[in-house]
Image 1 (spheres, rainbow, N blue to C red):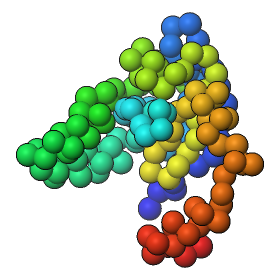
Image 2 (image 1 turned 90 degrees about the horizontal axis):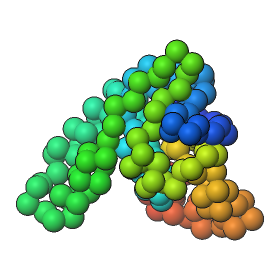
Image 3 (image 1 turned 180 degrees about the vertical axis):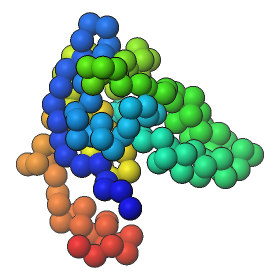
Amino acid sequence: MSKGLKGEYNHSVDAKGRMIIPSKLREQLGMTFVVTKGMDHCLHAYPNNEWEIFEGKLRQLPTTNEKTRAFKRFFLGSAADCEVDNQGRILLPASLRSFAGITKDVTIVGVGDHAEIWSKETWDSQNNVDDIDFNEIAKGIEELGIII
């Protein structure tokens, strides 16, 4: 079983839309992986094996359901295959950068089966420890049957 993606890394996007993928994450994402729109206006980067699992789950959803079709369009329609260059960078498509509000500084966060790529400004505003009610989060996790 492979290790999950973890950690928080700060980098920047250059004028051409390229960004460095930290070596620790590159080891697990691989030299090619999929980047797509994510929840909370960030991007999700999936190793190819995890993307296949995720895409397989989406394929099983009924296309007769309007919300299912919108969900599939959101993730599959924006998905891009990214390849790491010799300098450890990928080119983030302009449409994905625009969606996530990425202009220069980014925060990349490993969250288990994928990494999230955030505009640093959005990451900082949504993840201010002083604003997070960890007791409320813990209750929600317990309701899912996970005791920590």
